[in-house]
Length: 314
Image 1 (cartoon, rainbow, N blue to C red):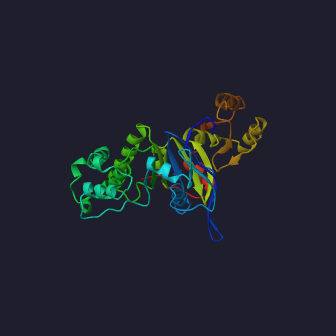
Image 2: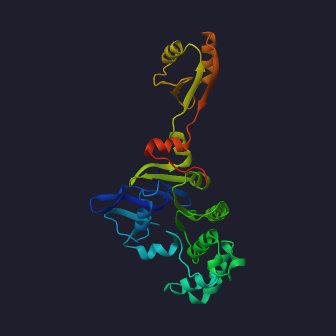
Image 3: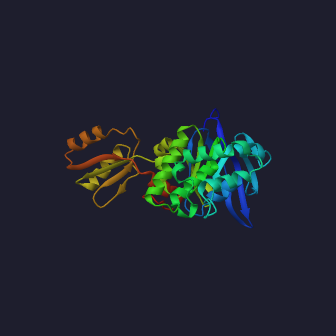
């Protein structure tokens, strides 16, 4: 990532060790300000442990963390007021209203301003679309409403970063849409959103940048466009006289050929000239039934990196 990009979150060689096991193994994260940054990985890959270290909730075994330019944990008190977080699901009193829960939580914050408390609570509820449900007891809220109430809690003060750990986990399709739409609207206001998920579909729909984590290590990182470009374009070709076809393709510099029962597949540059190859095949009197370029999906790319699948349909 270019050095000129201002970073909201930066880690260097960040490590968390439990006994002989490294839950997080020397990771370098670079989260640009104003981005919606996806932190993608299978469950148990170390995402939540990383988030807890970034927020100062767990001590790193070694490495460095910067949050809005502040070293963590040394200057945690300067950074945290600008950071809202929803980690491992919100906890509210079920027989209190949503509004009174937020008032209770804000009252427990020694740095909050009591004179503006009610106005800030009402503004946060409006921001997440819960004004009409503000007086309803939380036990009557749907899971999606509870997640939005958790986001309202994170927004009781002006924030520059929101850190969300699996924000749609356990939600039905309607609740998932509600939370995703809210994240999009917050991102449109210029807030940096750091969202962890094991759902590739969620990351693709929401994020401008991402990092892929598996077994405690970062195996890919960059903008969504950059990572898409890193997946190798393939030529897919169906024709007769397979043995002769393979020999001809090798003369054209295509040496890493994969023979399938009914086709030949070969990695090629993204600007490969399919038309010229097709003309050559016709000239050599091959019967070509299919010739095209294919871009592997992000799912295939990530599976190749991690050896694990990602859930892609919600």
